Amino acid sequence: MPIYVEKKPDVLIGEDGTRTDGRSPLDLRPIKIEVGILERADGSALVEWGGNRVLAAVFGPREVHPKHMLLPDRALLRLRYNMAPFSTPERKRPGPDRRSVELSKVIRTALLPAVFIEKYPGSAIDVFVEILRSDAGTRVAGVTAASLALADAGIAMRGLVAGCSVGRVDDFIVVDPNHDEDMWGDVDMPMAVLFEDRKITLLQADGPLTVEQFNECLRLGMACCEMVYELQKEALRRPYVMVERRALGVA
Ligand code: ADP
Image 1 (cartoon, rainbow, N blue to C red):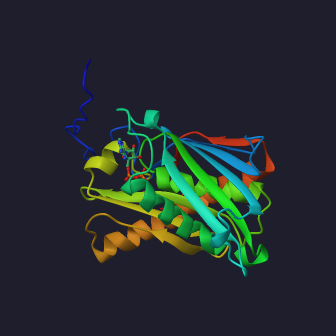
Image 2: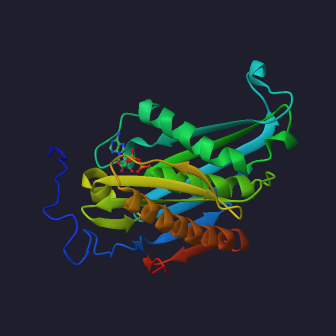
């Protein structure tokens, strides 16, 4: 049986800024969003983002089990991020691991400021983020999908939370890093923003940035999240919404 070995591409980004998938630094990958696709969930959304396929399902508000977790003054918002064993090129060991525990917490924290948990005292709101196929950026696609699934479930929210990553590859700041760039690039900076307030609810970075580079990442990340937010709003109005690869409309 051939063993899958990932290889670093010879060139991650060309001198003219061409990326391994042919995109320019400010191009996002194609995104397709469908809302309300699971009959048995109270709310659901499927986000196809580049090679990512991320399904979010919401159950609740519902009774809390086990009972000792009940919070008398607000809802218990629980979130589970799970990668299917078939979601990666090489079969992933099923079940939770350190990364999925961390990402469950990160996504929950990004969503929490958006949810009026105080409106549902003593109940549970359970959010499941299932990664069916992964291609870098699953946490931001997960935040995007989960926020839509909450809205689809009719949970009272301050606004939608939209996510997107930005990053640095050599001296280029790129939006929506692909798998090669996430794995071998210099910095991946996932972000999520609560709209309309434009409050940042998720910001991580896994490498060094100068202050100028950080400010540029922040500016472009904000613009990306805004673009994703526009798609989210459209998706809630229609059965589904889709964009081809699209350049970020900023100078
Ligand atoms: P994110 O998906 O939010 O970018 P990471 O930076 O941790 O999160 O992961 C980047 C990508 O690496 C994932 O989207 C996935 O394609 C891949 N990956 C992560 N964990 C595993 C794993 N256990 N096995 C194989 N591929 C993985």
